[in-house]
Length: 158
Image 1 (cartoon, rainbow, N blue to C red):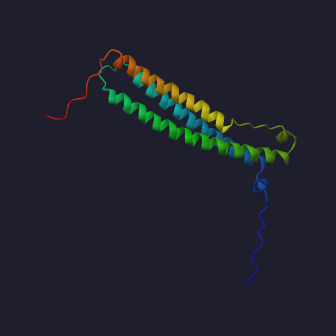
Image 2 (cartoon, rainbow, N blue to C red):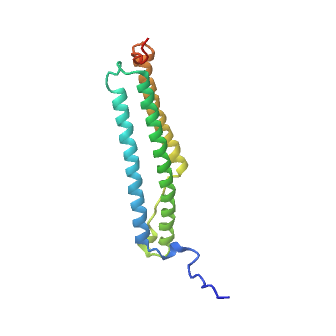
Image 3 (spheres, rainbow, N blue to C red):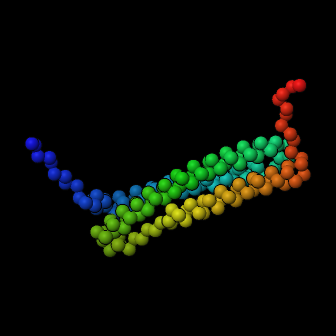
């Protein structure tokens, strides 16, 4: 039998990453995460502005339902990727912390912190709930309470 080559990988592969490399990776992930949050906020404000901001008495109830469900789908998918990215950011934060142990005096003072993915999920869920509640309230005020929403056209001809 041929001998299998011994693996030479260290138990902790992060140890061969310098402090600068670890911090650059962390910073890039942090920047990407901020972009995801900005995208979520921009879409949320656009949906709110479009739904709440103008006279929509001519909209069918199905239009409100479609906007509500579309936003919900977007927001849940966005939350999933933000939480996943936050978990990765935590791993990169740990890499920076490990790299600071073998750095000089300035590097040892470097502190990186991350928010727990659970807190991110809670805050994101509250943000989603606020937007969905605003859509529902707009429908209620403009259609349900005053019965002003037009009925969809009848597609069947008698």
